[in-house]
Image (tube, rainbow, N blue to C red; front, side):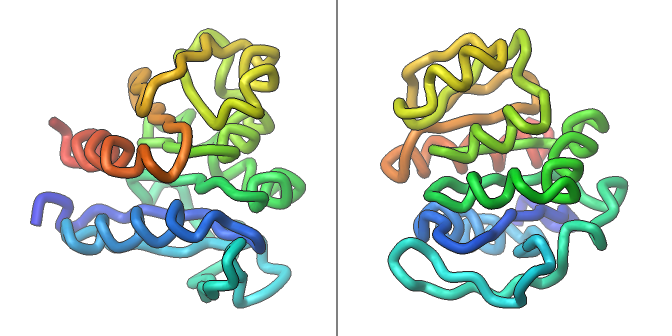
Length: 174
């Protein structure tokens, strides 16, 4: 268990991409991490694009960035909702500013844009938000996973194995 004692937050909202929440959730648990599903606080349960539910462990305004090791932003349509909640965007920004692992996949890049953390960074995302990423100051790369310091990004569900490999490496200090 390489991530024993690590705490990771996965942001959730309605219409999340099911695989992009559950694959990281289960892989991190397999590695021994404590994983929290964190929502906006407007509801206790959220449903993915394909209807699979997840119950939020707590709302974003109750997460202390000092007490976590990383934040994962899944894709789907959820990021467009997540970025409407200042406490969720603020959690990503604070975690990033503290040097924590911040990872986003697919449309999750929208939350990174709203957090203002992409300027001068190398990153990737689903191709539909490439212009948004570039306009936010990122150097956009069409690769399965891009690591720039503690910022980790991927494009789509098929990239999840590479995405999680790099998140686990970063969290374990490799």
